[in-house]
Amino acid sequence: MTDDRVLRIDRFPTGVITPPPSKSLSHRALICAALAGGVHAIDRIENMGDSDDISATRSGILNVLAGLCNRPVDCGESGSTLRFLIPIAAVFSDAWVFKGKGRLFERPLSVYSEVFAAHGVAFANTGDEVHVRGPLRAGIFEVRGDISSQFISGLLLALPLLDGDSEIRLLTPLESAGYVDLTLDVMHTYGVSVERRFSVKDHALTGFAVPGGQKYRETPFRIEPDYSQAAFFLGAGALGCEVAVAGLNPNSLQGDRRILDVLREMGAVIGGGDKSPHGFAQIRIQAPDEGLHGITIDVSDIPDLVPPIAALAAVSRGVTRIENAYRLRMKESDRLHALKEALGALGAEIIEEKDALVIVGKKTLSGGRTDAWKDHRIAMAVALAAIKCARTVEITGSGAVRKSYPAFWKDWSQR
Image (cartoon, rainbow, N blue to C red; front, side, top):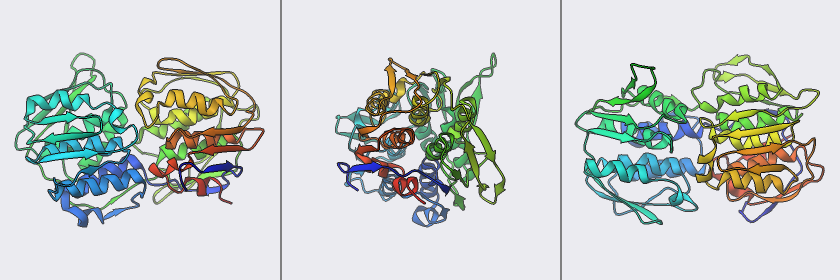
């Protein structure tokens, strides 16, 4: 499926769907496994994803560990790949070049340029590629926590490899903290320890103490299904589709597990929840008789849930306000603007503010043709909104889903 193909969205999910493996966990497990034992340890990971982003991380970490500094590390469009592998490459004394495509190098990288200078690393972002030369020195790393948690995760993955002890000090409160919790949990599974630091005054997280000289240890690991991707199918249930989602971990550290709370707040009824060996056997979301209703929600910790929430809000009663969403402007697309335009083309009423979306819900949208804005989550949001469109929806750029969920359209239209 090419990105310029026009896809008709005229079939919607039914039956039981098992979401793809968590992309967030796959990135982290791949890196920790590779650091523990290379390809052999990676092969012990069960239920590994096969998206473009995960392929980029696999090839990238193996490239770095093989010392192939004469070969650019191709990150594709994956911000996680780039931000996680830069500090790992900086551990070594070689000169590395990172390349990518799309908006990858428009997304923030200044955190690394600021912290590396004091720790022996040469760092340059030309706008088309990033150049890094180590070796990285242990010490104190002062980092803002309000740009992307991926910088914190990248440092956490790399610093245990250094000879000396290090400390990460947060200059601002950490947003999307759930993603850092995932990083620490996977690192712990692979035998690496990190200590969280808290303020005595209010017990707020202030940073991390990272002992050096540690070694990642090879271990089996299973990737659980992805709540971020499941959100679109759970949302389909909330709009009346007869669909159940299987395999989700009820105790997951994935921050996007909050989609269940969001759906409850919007009025949906959640059923099922019986457990199987690898998670929930099934979760079924039922649409309320009167339809979903609007909410006000702070999304600073759950930015990847904004596309499905926006699609649901567009066909809900009342007004929804999605707040603290400025970081969505720095994703694969400017997601605040892309959601306004992509859903607006279907008839949604959306007001775009600097760091928020205000959505005036309607019972149904008109439908018609729209675009995915070269963004996988925008394409999926369009698919969700199409359930409540009067006319068949056509979308250009549908192939963007390959970035995270290559089988999305197949699963979305399964019978």
